[in-house]
Image (cartoon, rainbow, N blue to C red; front, side, top):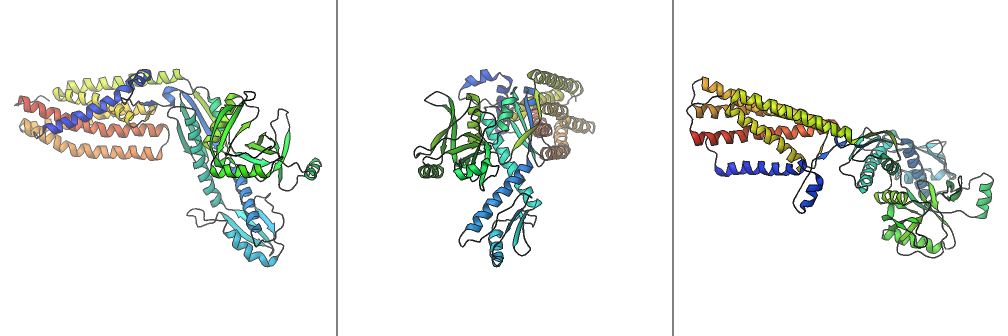
Length: 532
């Protein structure tokens, strides 16, 4: 019991001092700690319910994903059938949610099936393919998307979309946003401190699908379109040229996409100082851009963002270097939004806002005040009870409780965690349960004294026997917290994190730290009796 070497005492005090020092910046204004320079000053971040801010619930447009997969497969089928030796097929139909086409030569059915099978893949561990391939009437091939394939594509698209949303919000400079998936097709976005969600809403609602397509100015195609007949391989898109209702006919096949962008930034056009978006392609995209402009001098190409033509300039000369700019009817804010969206990548699936809330800072301040008041009352009530009940040993337990509260804040700051209102509830619960271990230890010491054991034996057996019960009780407590952490979301996770940290720190302070204090006192005074 008395074997408590100095290095162990120094280690315990040093660890607690470091963790308590990490908590200090969280109790000071950020403006003050920002002047500390190289000195570490981690802060506990406040959640949406404490700091105020914006809450958005985004829902994916799954019908658009199905359409995108269908169009992509149609293009792949067309390319695969055209590959030498070519297999002659009729028009490819996809208006019924399936890919269907006729083979002109029935003897090529097996060769076509072999090529098309390479375009399909297994859908996870379901044992199914992402597309079902069948032959109808001996000459028509039908490719049907499977539900397993769609679910796999949706899961991947939502994972990519979550990362894109995270990058876009980080570009806004907001602090500690919360971006988590909810269910199969929703994303929850919480941005503390952002009081005007409109800019965030506009940014996240932008798919940022950048495409370059050639404008179809062929006289025959223009005449056909004027009769209301859309030429094969063309599409008509809205054109933002300042006149409402203006459209332009472009080739359906994109000659270049935003996937090969390296960077994009808002700038100003030198001639008239109008806002533009500068962009730079990677080496592969730069070479392709140069080749396209070299072979299409005198023709027009359309710059398309989210299926709207922003501009359709003529190619006057070859563009080398892989750089250019997009001009249109931009404001500085809209050009900057487009640049952020292009930098962070396109959304693989469109997202729409289905729920929006704004929490004012006043409400957050009220929550903080109420939480601090509740925590203060809990600490004071525990301190008074423990001191009146156990005297000196209660004072040791009280010191452990106070240190435990500060240490929890230090650990939260070290982990860069976000404190929410349920997290404050976890604080209060931790304070109430932190002294459980000391109650068990003190009652066991009392019991050993009643049995006639000496002071030293009573204290030694009290800590030894009670520690087993304390460990088992806190393990079951921790299991519950881990389950909430793994299966919960949002506020439940915030509560579980504080609870888990509190369990670990309270056991350390209540058992190890108080034992060190008791041993130091016994060594110094050698009491023959104790009042507990």
